[in-house]
Image (cartoon, rainbow, N blue to C red):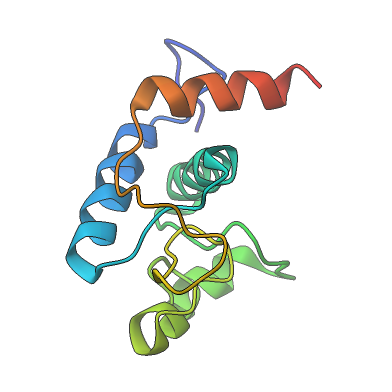
Length: 121
Protein backbone atom coordinates (compact mmCIF):
# COMPACT_ATOMS: atom_id res chain seq x y z
CA UNK A 1 0.00 0.00 0.00
CA UNK A 2 1.51 3.33 -1.03
CA UNK A 3 0.87 6.56 0.78
CA UNK A 4 -1.64 8.45 -1.38
CA UNK A 5 -0.48 11.84 -0.07
CA UNK A 6 3.17 11.20 -1.00
CA UNK A 7 3.92 8.00 -2.93
CA UNK A 8 7.64 8.18 -2.06
CA UNK A 9 7.05 7.57 1.64
CA UNK A 10 5.36 4.48 3.10
CA UNK A 11 2.29 5.00 5.27
CA UNK A 12 3.91 3.39 8.30
CA UNK A 13 7.07 5.52 8.19
CA UNK A 14 6.07 7.55 11.26
CA UNK A 15 5.20 4.39 13.23
CA UNK A 16 8.51 2.69 12.41
CA UNK A 17 10.40 5.91 13.17
CA UNK A 18 8.82 6.10 16.64
CA UNK A 19 9.32 2.36 17.23
CA UNK A 20 13.02 2.58 16.30
CA UNK A 21 13.74 5.45 18.66
CA UNK A 22 11.78 3.89 21.50
CA UNK A 23 13.36 0.46 21.06
CA UNK A 24 16.90 1.90 20.91
CA UNK A 25 16.34 3.79 24.16
CA UNK A 26 14.68 0.83 25.88
CA UNK A 27 17.47 -1.60 24.94
CA UNK A 28 20.44 0.74 25.34
CA UNK A 29 21.37 0.36 21.68
CA UNK A 30 22.37 3.05 19.21
CA UNK A 31 21.87 3.91 15.57
CA UNK A 32 24.61 3.46 13.00
CA UNK A 33 27.13 6.28 12.64
CA UNK A 34 26.00 6.46 9.01
CA UNK A 35 22.45 7.70 9.52
CA UNK A 36 21.57 6.93 5.90
CA UNK A 37 21.66 3.25 6.89
CA UNK A 38 19.31 3.95 9.79
CA UNK A 39 16.91 5.85 7.53
CA UNK A 40 16.84 3.25 4.76
CA UNK A 41 16.27 0.39 7.23
CA UNK A 42 13.40 2.29 8.88
CA UNK A 43 11.92 2.91 5.44
CA UNK A 44 12.24 -0.81 4.61
CA UNK A 45 10.50 -1.80 7.83
CA UNK A 46 7.69 0.66 7.05
CA UNK A 47 7.26 -0.66 3.51
CA UNK A 48 7.05 -4.23 4.78
CA UNK A 49 4.53 -3.16 7.43
CA UNK A 50 2.50 -1.51 4.63
CA UNK A 51 2.70 -4.56 2.36
CA UNK A 52 2.60 -7.47 4.82
CA UNK A 53 1.19 -6.04 8.04
CA UNK A 54 4.43 -6.60 9.96
CA UNK A 55 7.88 -4.97 10.00
CA UNK A 56 9.77 -7.83 8.38
CA UNK A 57 13.55 -7.31 8.38
CA UNK A 58 14.35 -5.54 5.08
CA UNK A 59 17.99 -6.67 5.01
CA UNK A 60 17.44 -10.32 4.23
CA UNK A 61 16.32 -12.26 1.17
CA UNK A 62 13.09 -14.27 1.48
CA UNK A 63 11.60 -16.71 -0.97
CA UNK A 64 8.17 -16.05 0.53
CA UNK A 65 7.84 -12.85 2.55
CA UNK A 66 4.27 -13.56 3.63
CA UNK A 67 5.32 -16.93 5.07
CA UNK A 68 8.24 -15.31 6.89
CA UNK A 69 5.91 -12.72 8.43
CA UNK A 70 3.68 -15.48 9.80
CA UNK A 71 6.72 -17.24 11.35
CA UNK A 72 7.63 -13.94 13.05
CA UNK A 73 11.31 -14.88 13.46
CA UNK A 74 12.52 -12.00 11.27
CA UNK A 75 9.84 -9.47 12.27
CA UNK A 76 11.57 -6.50 13.87
CA UNK A 77 12.84 -6.75 16.48
CA UNK A 78 13.94 -10.16 15.24
CA UNK A 79 14.81 -13.10 17.47
CA UNK A 80 18.61 -12.55 17.22
CA UNK A 81 18.11 -8.94 18.31
CA UNK A 82 15.82 -9.81 21.19
CA UNK A 83 17.99 -12.69 22.41
CA UNK A 84 21.55 -11.48 21.72
CA UNK A 85 21.31 -7.81 20.64
CA UNK A 86 22.48 -8.78 17.14
CA UNK A 87 20.90 -6.63 14.43
CA UNK A 88 21.78 -7.80 10.93
CA UNK A 89 20.53 -4.46 9.50
CA UNK A 90 22.76 -2.35 11.75
CA UNK A 91 19.72 -0.43 12.98
CA UNK A 92 20.25 -1.27 16.66
CA UNK A 93 23.93 -1.47 17.63
CA UNK A 94 25.55 -2.00 21.01
CA UNK A 95 27.95 0.72 22.14
CA UNK A 96 30.86 -1.70 21.61
CA UNK A 97 30.10 -1.98 17.89
CA UNK A 98 32.62 0.00 15.85
CA UNK A 99 29.81 1.39 13.65
CA UNK A 100 27.63 2.60 16.54
CA UNK A 101 27.01 6.29 17.02
CA UNK A 102 25.90 7.83 20.28
CA UNK A 103 22.48 8.58 18.77
CA UNK A 104 19.14 7.05 19.68
CA UNK A 105 17.07 9.59 17.75
CA UNK A 106 16.74 10.57 14.12
CA UNK A 107 14.29 13.15 12.87
CA UNK A 108 11.57 12.25 10.41
CA UNK A 109 12.99 15.00 8.18
CA UNK A 110 16.40 13.29 8.15
CA UNK A 111 14.77 9.99 7.23
CA UNK A 112 12.82 11.59 4.38
CA UNK A 113 15.93 13.40 3.11
CA UNK A 114 17.92 10.15 3.00
CA UNK A 115 15.04 8.37 1.25
CA UNK A 116 14.82 11.16 -1.32
CA UNK A 117 18.58 11.01 -1.89
CA UNK A 118 18.43 7.25 -2.47
CA UNK A 119 15.49 7.59 -4.87
CA UNK A 120 17.44 10.12 -6.97
CA UNK A 121 20.13 7.55 -7.89
